[in-house]
Amino acid sequence: MGRGFYIQCHFTHTFKRKISLYCDMGLKQIDHGSKEYQQMVTLRFEIMRKPLGLSFSPEELAKEKNDILIGAFDEDEMTGCCILTDISSGSVKLRQMAVLKNMQGKGIGETIIQFAENIARDKGYKTLTMHARDTAIGFYEKYGYKVEGAGFLEINIPHHIMKKKLR
Ligand SMILES: CC(C)(COP(=O)(O)OP(=O)(O)OC[C@H]1O[C@@H](n2cnc3c(N)ncnc32)[C@H](O)[C@@H]1OP(=O)(O)O)[C@@H](O)C(=O)NCCC(=O)NCCS
Image (cartoon, rainbow, N blue to C red; front, side, top):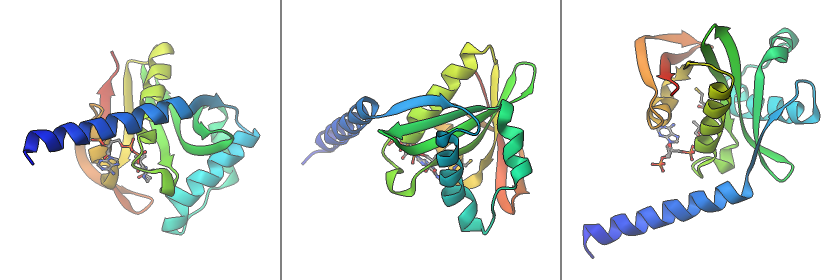
């Protein structure tokens, strides 16, 4: 079997996987303090904090009141999320990007980041920036984000600043 055949099968498989996901999945902005926000905090805790032995303080969560809160849903279940926080005129910071463990690698992260970028553009932001965990740099690079500057530790794990100009 030639290499060309393999590439075509891989492409068709990936394409179908993503098309079926776009059809089944709902993305929306959610309200701080809502039932969906509770789901978001639980998901973030499971994926981002629990493995590090950390939790969220009430003060930390209260600060999210003015943030843009985004959830991906499969019917009523939140499968992934992220947050956009205004940092200065023209720039917004992507935070708390997470997908349920058993749903990772199915295209959910891609749809969330594209949805978040569209919201940021609609609100007039020119740049999207983030503190990316080093383990996720390859994911963000796929969508045009570039590393800036030296690495640093945040919540005790290696991070880099990544940025993208929104067009
Ligand atoms: C990083 C994360 C949000 C990606 O979401 P996901 O739904 O698994 O990603 P997708 O399935 O949409 O992947 C899209 C593409 O990125 C690639 N990708 C996914 N995670 C990656 C990673 N950590 N490094 C490099 N590439 C990655 C996929 O292979 C896929 O590539 P393809 O289009 O060529 O097939 C998710 O894996 C996650 O929640 N990880 C744990 C929490 C975390 O690290 N969050 C980021 C903090 S900065």
